[in-house]
Image (tube, rainbow, N blue to C red; front, side, top):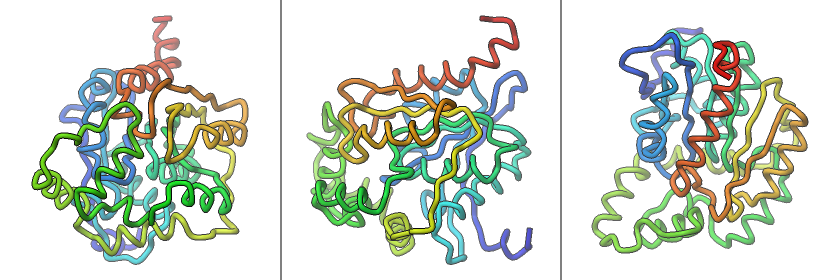
Length: 281
């Protein structure tokens, strides 16, 4: 690796205080709408009982940044792997949500010797340009404005779109919401906007290969950001090595709305083989 590549980055990546060698490694890759700490608040404690957790902030989220100009999901994937290598992680499974699903998919494709199992929650991986455009029309908002809220009403729109059953911010005062927005989304604003634009751009040469890893797709049946048909489409693309689990009465942010179901599915899927080896099944 070129030394300039290292110096131009700052990785914010949480790892376990004490790595347990009898536990598998699990990397959690967040989506838009905040950093890892906020998005995985309902996953960390329950999953830490079963896994050594590694939780990176993607570039331009949390305290992660780079002076380089790449904005692709492949670049984000390389940055995550570089951070994991720095912590001595040789093998891991991953759980990736929404935008993180694009990054995680590329990571599994580019580093198959490292990534053992893949869990993707509610992501638009593999959807065509036409599907992206149609979905944006349905949502009816500028995706840059939506994904990077500037004021409380933007945050309400994003939360209402992402969560089916309730709005956790419904009764929160505007000054509190504004502080929350300033904390999660106003740093590296230009760079975050460029990431969204890259994701939505027409990459006609962009082919999503079939992953070699066993893959679990988790979807809320009421997802309005990436509707369930995207889940079925991705499962068909991946073929018999992938299975799709649908959580009822749940929207896009299933990790926040139905965390017990999501955590149980992750645990069962990743530990299955490990438990078989240990003779526990």
